[in-house]
Length: 83
Image (cartoon, rainbow, N blue to C red; front, side, top):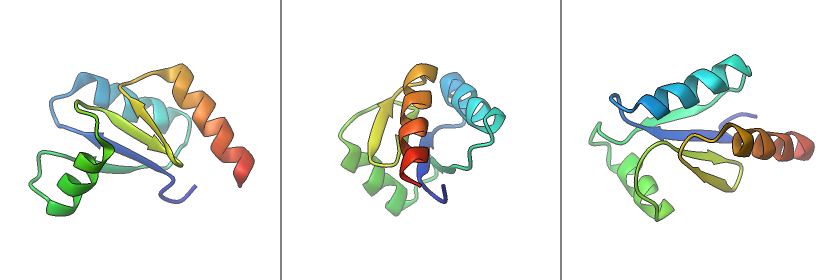
């Protein structure tokens, strides 16, 4: 699942920390993009999502707004069935 999971975060966001911990516990590799690091690419990608707030979790082509274990599990299962 190389780069199939991306999470937009901030350093101060508790739900971001929970989401990252949950993905690590499930041994899911993910790419983290901190929206506060003033990286133009990250800013453009984050803005293209059209949603505000963090975490924004992208699994495949699905976007999960916030930390929701059930939705994460559903989308991970869908992604695994494609591989």
